Length: 160
Image 1 (cartoon, rainbow, N blue to C red):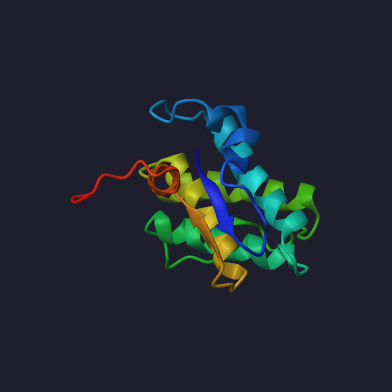
Image 2 (cartoon, one colour):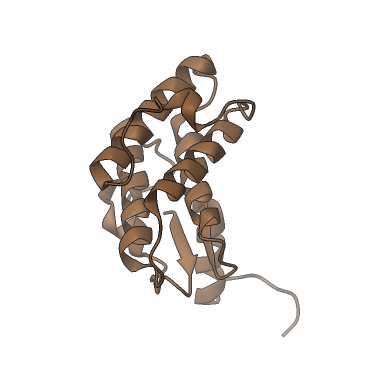
């Protein structure tokens, strides 16, 4: 289960994983491309709808795609290299389509060497970093499991 941790979004730790059936299941199983797109869409929607301050979704999109490019080892490219400059931005539908275009272009340009989960996680990290908020962050599934264990008091320690 992956989630966005923030005090400014007022999210519960299990929200993202519980909202997407694929993420609520065992994480040892690889997610399908459709489930990964749902993961992105859920994170995007949570940021757009629940962040306290109004967010500029076009900037979220550009930052997310820039981080995907970095994750794919294509940091020499920019947004307009993977999404046509004429593609509209701003609406949820347009931004989701731009995400799909970027994923396809990045996979082609990288020779499909980077997996989709890495790209989607990069997209989410980029969107959260665009918030420029020290209280909001994205936790990868493994870090989330560690935090949940810690919060439940399941950590191991020495002493009494």
